Length: 211
Image (cartoon, rainbow, N blue to C red; front, side, top):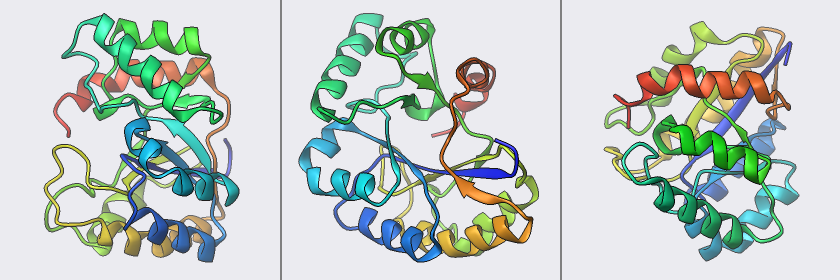
């Protein structure tokens, strides 16, 4: 992933905000990965199609946003199966567990369904109240480098404290500019199965304190 920074969005699609994020990405000519909740994707199939048709990647964030360490394995297994069923022909290769928290069942299910568990390296913390595009860029910018994965949200997910995702929409353009100013390019996430599984395990403990 040398020279590339992955832009990622969780918790959508959202009928009001995902189109605005897509508009900003289109204007910036920047690809991104959308870790969708299948229950929402099933409600807004036209948004899922637009994401895919625009050159972005549809990835998996689960069905009902269940933390993998708070439910029996059978519940996570059922949630995963139902979510993948709802996504239909969109067979995701990438999976980010809700809150970034994984359990042994997460890795087992990832192998079973041929998905790559992915975490992040830079967190915009855009779900918090009071964050602006400027404050989020200041948080992210020092860590921008080859192989970085930036976490953002194109919807108001469970536990979010903000009123709406408008600061995230406003962040897209200056973030892409900052990436390119460093001689890097926005990108999709490449196939790095072993590395991604390690990221998920190592960072899961930190994620327990996050949303």
